[in-house]
Image 1 (tube, rainbow, N blue to C red):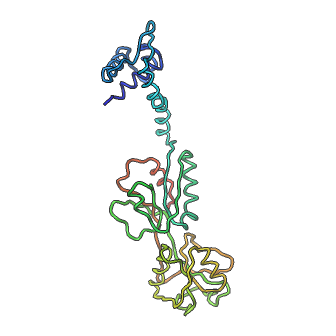
Image 2: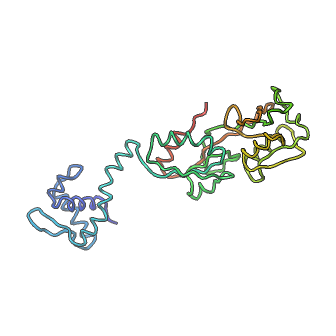
Length: 293
């Protein structure tokens, strides 16, 4: 294996055109003989001459030296800037996040805005998922999964970043719309508007119904919150919508009421691999994550 300090000596000689000039150009104190020794040991390891003398203290790269110099030059020229950016926290790179539609729409924008304000060179890639995709973490396809994760498996670290609360949603003209306290059983046999099967929000709806001992006799389904709200506004039934907004979902023709007795909350967490190698970009994302009151 070639030792990097020997490549460093070679780089400065090739760039400066001589051993004495290289010693003066080094970013730290070093003598001319020490630089000469670095180059000679590198030539011995490679088995080729890297320089030829063209004058007093003037060295020019051989064809082999030119090829090596073109290879190492970008690294040594970029290194000071990389070190400076790491020390100042001004680094770039890519951050991959998998999350659900509701979180993507209502939680991630302000979070990413804070992150990019501090670290404008970080590129964020967001991918919408219908369920928490922890396999993407394990396979290195994502850095963060932000979602409701009922059971946290071994090897996954989490930090709570938000809370989802379920809200009763009914038409604004509904007979119960003016009531302060509403029981799900008061809706009788009215149709319940649920998310389509297979979607995580549907699981949250069903869990909320089960905890309140309610079993709707009829169901209509929609794949999005907008679709559900449209059905409710049209008077086709009532629903339960999980919401990150502490005042509940918003729409012109609906009335919302909190689910109480028992009160239900679903924690939203940012999840990552516990064995993730040191990653300042991931650290920056977690540092700018929403803080719970």
